Image (cartoon, rainbow, N blue to C red; front, side, top):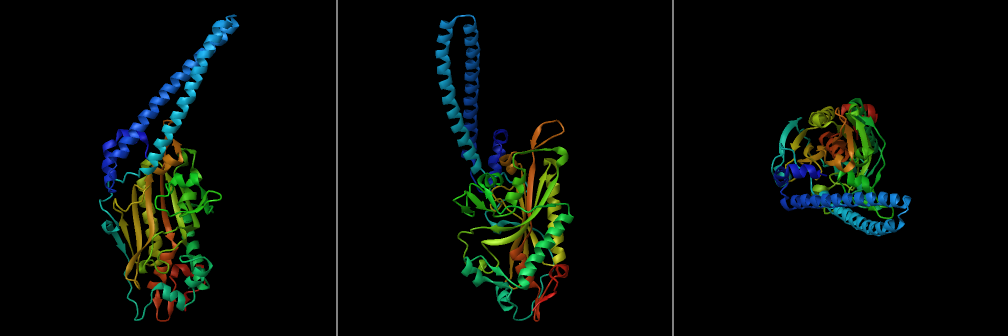
Length: 423
């Protein structure tokens, strides 16, 4: 959530920045400034009325002590009127503050100055590519056919148990899935991230804190009886570890990693491009999260990019990195790089990771601050990245590592799987 003081001071920059998202934000920005001015005017009037009421109360007490009860009773009538006025102003102030907050929840983050203009993923900029795309043997199969051939993932069984988008991993498929999770966590903890086991459901405040709520795209599964939400990513519970927290500057930086299943409705996703593991309602992901000093967050962002690159290099998968354009960057992010692995059997790129810097956007919602060297409270910067999302990594391994004799496991994973071939 943008700070009102920031919107007011940098009004034209905010409008210009949000135009990169293809949003005409002038009306929203003006409305936010107006609501804040009205809120502050009500607060000033309320403070004045309370001060007058307190002064009269003291005067009434003194009059009673001096035996002037008649004068005291006259003043009491006025304090009754003042208290009614205070009550009305408090109600008006509450309504104005709620209206301002509701509006601020609708305003997305301002993209970083380096974010390119564009309308959709077709306008994202490729900034890096690594690895050679393998040449597969004749008769190479997409991962959903390989899963059936080697009996390692059962999509039909998942459909029977739950519905489409909930696969069942079995045998060596389940072991490979577990091996990837362990490998990712080991890489992250070795890089200094602290591992957490996190809840898979969160309350409304947690969803608001990281920007998933209000749910603008209908992607969250909502447990209505308890008003809880199934997490779309470990980013939500992991970042909310620090909600309503005042850190010391010496506490920074903080790194968190965790494995969780993730749940997304993926409403409106149909067609061949979402077949198999390409688009699921439930999938596994290992996340990295950082809480940083504002001066250091973009250096941390680059280190996260380097970290994910290192993991993919060890898996020996061909991948590329995209800088997302203004029309494709997420609601809460200031800057996002996407990692995509090439699926040779499908002849297409599959997103496997997003690394984002949210700057103060989430921290303002979370009330996540630190006490700086001047003793003042300052908002932290938050960052997160997939390290990594498993379904498409697994799809990439199955398809790119297939041979005529079976699927060769990447060497780095063999100590985790206990086997080097699926056949």
